[in-house]
Image 1: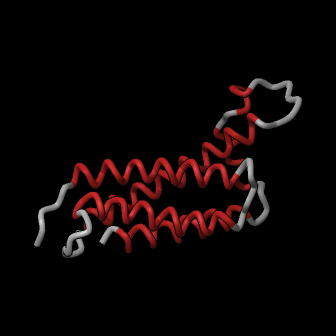
Image 2: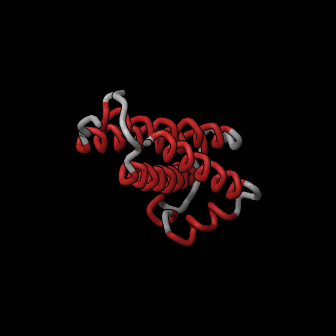
Image 3: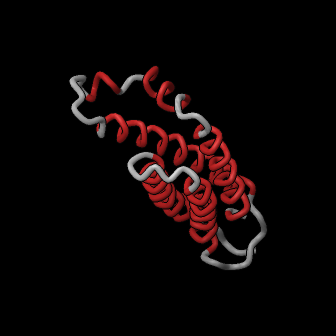
Length: 141
């Protein structure tokens, strides 16, 4: 069994999470590539899981470490929720000719109206999160 570097794993996991958050949010709102979110979920989960694994063991053989897999799931949830919030903020900032200040549009009720008022898109978001979580769990082994 090889030594594990948990601080390095968490640092790389956080960097991967920030990357996934930004990529998912940009695909979600300004680009509006809905089915691309499924790909973003798969690639994002893979990136988060493998960043944690690489940070911990530096590509050396190791046994699966369950706490690192749970960390991957937590980071996926942070990336997914953060991406949804960022996409909402971007959507409100890009409303043309709005007489309402941005700060007044950024409310919890408006966020849920935005999220659930998008036909089938909430289903795609949930599927993307499930794929992201699965890939991160598998990658962080």
